Amino acid sequence: MQINHFFKPRRLVILGIVFVALLFYIIFTFGKLAAIPVTAKSQQVEVPQRGGIYDKNGKTLAIESNFYHIAVQPSAIRNLNEFATYLAPVTDLTKEEIISKINNAPIDFLYLEKSINRDKKDIISKTIKEHTLSGIYFDEIPGRIYPENALASQVIGYMGNAGTGLSGIEYTMQNILQPSEEMIKKGSSNIGNNIFLTIDANLQYQLEEIAQKAMEETQAESFMLISANAKTGEILSYISLPSANLNEYPQSTKEEQKDLPAMAAYEPGSVFKIFTVATALQTGAITPEQKFVCDGGEWIYGTGNEKAYIKCLGHHGTITAREALMYSCNDVLVQIAEKISTDDFLSYINKFGFGSKTGLQRPGETAGSVKDKYDPLWSFRSKPTMAIGQEISVSALQMVQATTAIANKGIPVKLTLVSKITDPNANVVYQHKPEYKKRIIDENVAKQILSYMQTVAEKGTGFRAHRDDIDIGVKTGTAQILDPETGTYSTTDFVSNCMSIFPIDDPQIILYIVISKAKGETYSGRIVAPIIGEAADVIIDQLGLARGRASSITHTGKIVIPPSKDYSIDRTVPDFTGAAKRELTHLFLNKNIQVLIHGEGYVISQSPEPGTPVTENMKIELFLE
Image (cartoon, rainbow, N blue to C red; front, side, top):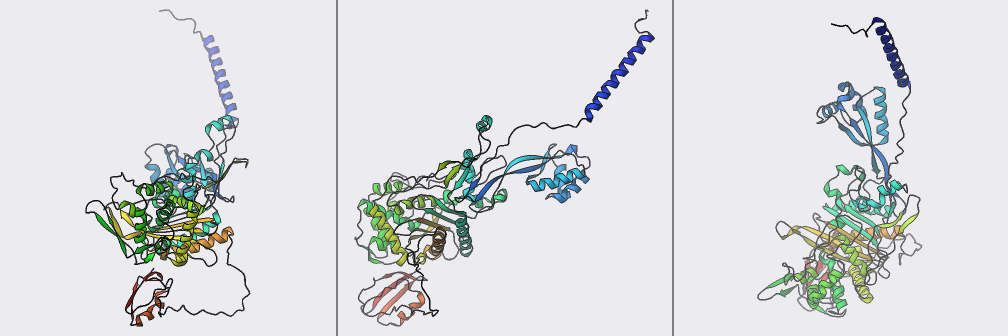
């Protein structure tokens, strides 16, 4: 065997010296580099900033903010017991909850808490640094602060953790509020536009207080209120109760999140009669002076032996269309409907916008339901029952949209929730201008309906909404709720609603209120009309509308209480409208007449009419609400 003479001792020594020198050089260089502080490189990536949402006067309703998720990597935690002990006091979790969460994490990662604010993040960061905790860091996420909490919450909507709107304006105007990726890449802007709503936050707040109080007093399931500028279509207040606190939106219920004015479809009952009478006048089916006779109900007939009886709440005698609305007379409204051709009736229902979405900036808006004569469910009952607000479903938005035609001389104006849009530099990029639609009814017909609604407020079912110093027009309605499971009307659940317009001589405001499933009293004239009056007062004062008869006088300090009106019966029947039940008890002492009182509260109609000569053994019926 030959020995390789290359590995001689001298050569091995030299090779070892070179190797050791090289090793020392590597260690020295590594140590030198390790001693240099590491400077994090700036990514130079600007985080997109979402635009704000404001009321019409610039009050902040939604503003951009950053939030943080507490991220944990369980395998990197050195001592879980100490980790949990130090973190528990500065989080919303107990020591035991932290340990349980980490031990039960399905993977080597979890979020201990989500969406914490900057202040809380700073406190936790300080704790991490003081106790050199490992395995914990923060993920920054885009966030939103809603300074007014639940105010107009269904209008504003909610932005989720991914930076996209999930409901309301946050959802429908996502592309306006959030800068697009293309804009950010081009460097044109990384900030979204700002949206100014038509909502007046101060007015909204005052009306929400009224609404909350009404909900408590009636023990209702839900409450809706919309007020709008009759000339521009701008919605001034938009209430849907129950409502969610937007800063606690994930914890809210589905009922609190639901946008009822846009999404809820219901039968409006007698409020719909204003559109039936408007159609009848516009088509020439009736005249303002035409007389009808209400004897307590009306028979309607189909083909063959089909017939049905539509009952009225009273026996109103010989009356006009004005008085039919004043008394909310089903009998006469059915007679009026029978004089309108089916084609005309359905055509005008569609022209008023029923059966179609309004197109307001709302997600999930319902179109309601309007049958036509070819519908399998259409019957000989359909037209007369639709005329009184049954067999048709509407939304609150549709009702207000349709009413703009009556308030605006026969020409509807499109509703809107957006007043203007500005860019990040406060330049106006959109300014709302009224969008008028095609005329539906003639101006004189619109004036006629306004006059009829004023009569309803002064003498009819809506007298509790009447204001002494401003002319207001109303129409009340109470409708049974259809049970979808049984297909029959509930005997306990009702929709109570009231439409109002004011001032009558130059309509400025449309105000509509809907109370659903009130407990106890359900008649709209009793529970909704007073709220209409109260809300109208707030709107008038907030917007500075003139009160025509609100003159200032010097008072002597002496108060004179006027005597009660005399309702005694002499030669003719007096006008009992507005009389309280307690003021009528003396009538039972009169042996020559028979007095029948129906209902509780105040007289809304009577039979026979005021001025009718009194005869022996005459029967007088008074209907109270």
